[in-house]
Length: 233
Image 1 (cartoon, rainbow, N blue to C red):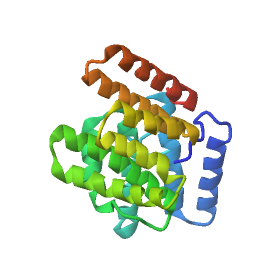
Image 2: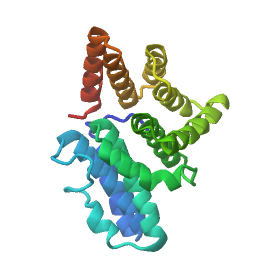
Image 3: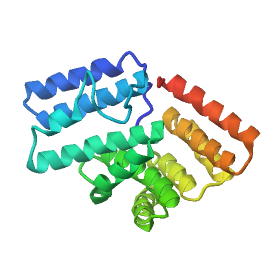
Image 4: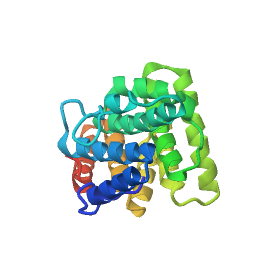
């Protein structure tokens, strides 16, 4: 969930270094994790024909998962589905969101790696509220509410990493300009540029639905430049 710019000269070399280490120490699931993240970065930078699919120069989800079985397949599909759900939120692919939420509905829980848990529950929470409201699907609302409760608890405990996520999911769960502005402010303070961009974009879309066109355009334009500064195209 760190807001490291996608165009940072350190990002790709580090991912490649981790991949090589995973190969050297014969840890295929770790190799999969780093190569799939590298493909996510490429999708965000190059905007391919199917940007929510993890298929390209760095990683081919279908081919790689086809070589796995048992728990390795289950956890790897969990992780690639999390990345694809994030891409679906960025590129606003509702069909992909629904499909990934179905896969991830069994994984709205913590695991051993906190950062991975945060990222997964973050995207489930956002997409769950958005699609649950649009499709009038109570099960998705309940799934998203579980994620919101997780971050609410951490926020009350003083977690600085959980608080921006909680404020953004909370804004999506009950949209208003003030709630989005609150999320925008705290994401900006935390230098979470991609989360700030998402908050501006979702607020802009909300304001458009409310017929506040001029203000909506301002928020959408700001989100565009934030995504650009982050390194997405």
